[in-house]
Image (cartoon, rainbow, N blue to C red; front, side, top):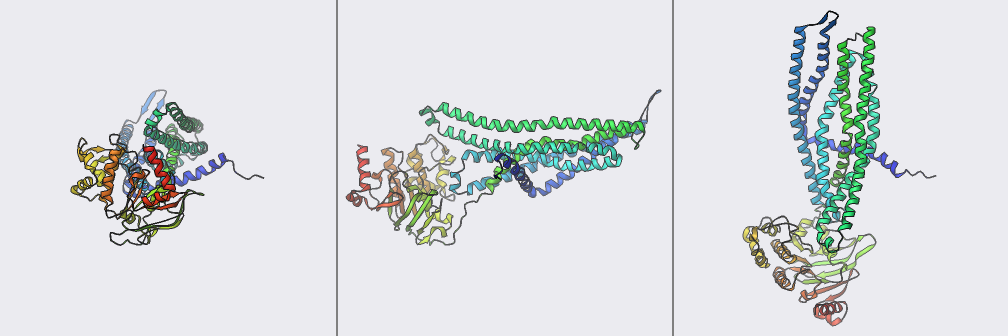
Length: 600
């Protein structure tokens, strides 16, 4: 017998539990807003209590009227006093509501800012491996759309929930005092209201969860399409990209429409139930009035119809808010998923000695991005302090992976990496990355001036140090040609600068860190021969007196390395200097000969 739960049924059973848990946590975020919440609660309570008096006063005003065959008679003084009292209540209730609204807006702003700050800080602290499985567009959607959904929920629900409790309890007490029988008539439709809302909300949560995920997918697709616009045009993929965009849009629209249709069914349903409630109160009240039972007057019926409206209004409002609530809870679930993720820890206990030496050893290192597919397989390599070691090999051989492990972007599956005899897992990451500076293959600029980008290597560096870093790495030559020199504004996707020019600025940034070991990953990639010569001079200056690891496809750039390690199948297949490896006529010899032939 198959006892498995169908997927659709399982989701329906899990969703409410997940929604309740998320809702509790969301309101837990209000803990730091006690003072404004207390103030808002006081104003809301005062405004709500005043509003509760209105039906009673209107009922009494109606009872001052006496309609007979001779005409209309009324108690002028009493009616005037009641009308003035009603006007005062309306005025003060409006003032209290205004100030309560301002406090509610402040609370909403503070909570949403706090959540956004927590999320952005967590994203910055996440390890590199986290972003391998999470797209940047989806992360942007969580920081913007999802948090906006949460803010909307808080702004709408905070006052509504508190007011609803006061109104429901207040109305219930007053109605029970005035007439228990009419109170039971009013309560008879509440159960129907709750049942309908619960049934619809259970299905809506799943649809809104799908909708918010679709928003993240759309953001990622748009971001990718913009970044790859030249490639799309070059390969004439415009129609395919448009088709994919339409597919994602249709998926998002489908989930959104289903959720909105269910949410849109709630207001008319509540309206029907409310009208039934109104008719029942009037019908039963009229019968009691005609038969002279329970002391019911016309004013009592009038007051009860108003109290029943007040009593059911917060229930109806909450029912109508279910659509927004489910959407916000789906967003909160996505936000808390990231906030709960394990951040990168700056662990380590050992301290590196303050000296100029920096030997690096890789001992039997094995690593896999995907379990079972080894990129590095029992890899070993010793680099003496002050040595310049080049890593060469075919694309995908594991050269860049080795650098990622050295920087502790990832941890090896087995084996260890030592710096001056200390396992890097015992060194704080902040200390390790200050000791070893890497200029990675896809080195990028940040939004700001060129000066800001260089100073990113040491935020405490003065202007003279920044300019000196640019000079010694030959970056000043290209910086002087920019419209505003060091003060030229650049961005992470600036198309005005070539790959080589960006690389020089990043080399200047690296020089400010004053590292003991320097890693250069494909510093010569995608540059012409003239720029290559400039970068080579910058590298030689930067590498003086440091332990250096250079990854290069252009073998002509590493002929002066002290040692060249040739990668194959995740291991060092050959090791030696340029002349020794050529003399062996092995893998390195073939690579070098192929490049020489292709460069002719």
